[in-house]
Length: 173
Image (tube, rainbow, N blue to C red; front, side, top):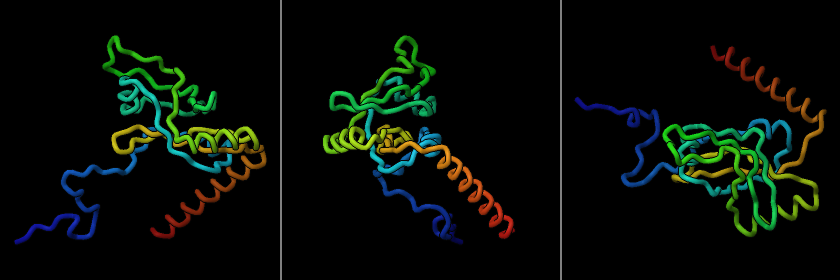
């Protein structure tokens, strides 16, 4: 009598090859308010300069992106008002929760962001933080601010989508 695994029956994911990591990003934090307040035009992936206790605190989920923003100064990108809470086992090696952090972007991406933010009045906002290949990455977006009617339209669209999903779910039952 043979045993069948969930993979053999067609359910679940196939097992990862030996020696390879699963490179699917794990989302640590999201800034949902950014999508409500801005039209997100282009997305970029940036690394960050962090200290050890910050990395451990982010892995514990002690991070808040809500009020954070990106400013480009002197040809470099910096992240302001990102709150990373204290790591539970940090002891005397604690970090400042609200310090400014440098973002790591390619020269080409930085030049593009500098040009677009200076000319067109666009801004750069962080949208989500995730773990990818053992490194913490930040997704930043080039964004244009929404006016009040646009925000109302976004809310109407979200409500309509929610009602549609509920109707489909009821139909399936």
